[in-house]
Image 1: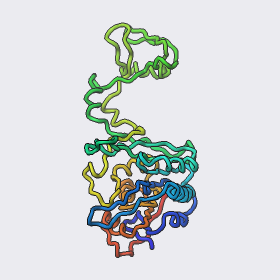
Image 2 (image 1 turned 90 degrees about the horizontal axis):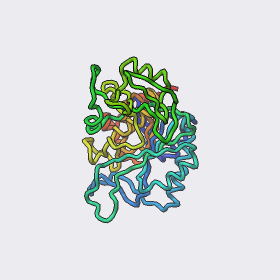
Image 3 (image 1 turned 30 degrees about the vertical axis):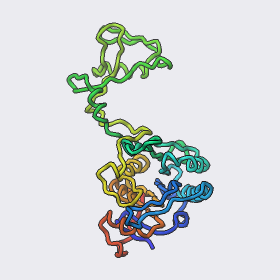
Image 4 (image 1 turned 180 degrees about the horizontal axis):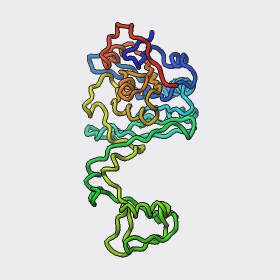
Length: 335
């Protein structure tokens, strides 16, 4: 049975691989997979709650399980799509081995999910999860998403100012270990001819000079820089280290499932790898965080989980009735 807790959300309860086998080949733009971690633990909401799941395997059975799931997911992923595989850094070896068998492009994103581990006494505190970004080819759908600048960066970087406002300094000279564009350049009585060359071509540097976007040294022999204005620089492009999104336990979002991830994390992944109207699949959806993120960003979402206990939890995200199956199957993605 398929339910529709929201017009753009489809919820199915059943085995992951069996469900994915019912989907058309190359039909999904993005997949978010947050499977059991092989952590040798059982997860519940609290000591007096049965809602949760077991996560105890042998390495052999865990690898066999992932092999089956990843192979089925690869079949339904579009050629320019992305599969995100979320795992604890402690348990990353087996998943990475399986993923690299199936995908030629596997890039780790390091999510620093919490600030510290004050209760650790005889080992290093585990603060990192790995999100493997998996693609069938190098050229795939990718959108630049900005991270907010942290307060320390803002305070220390944009100290200079002119009639346009505060600005930081950007390099225009190539670093000494490389060779850039070679030419001599003059501005305001200074002549520059760096031994390592320039990072940009001469017409681009001339344009910066004509628009008063060059920061001059105070004396001969100093370096030339370009001006990067605060008002023109709303954020920094995402790197592969995310330390600006905290886990639910250290944030303001309420926890709906033992291993639930923050909505903001899923929104970022979705915005990087899909466009509005694209179809996203979460085959082990837990509390339905991916569904919420898709609704917030205008995507369409297919949810599946083997645990029937999650039905009312998913519906609670959209204030829908889990006993009312009359919602129209309005789930439809852009081709």
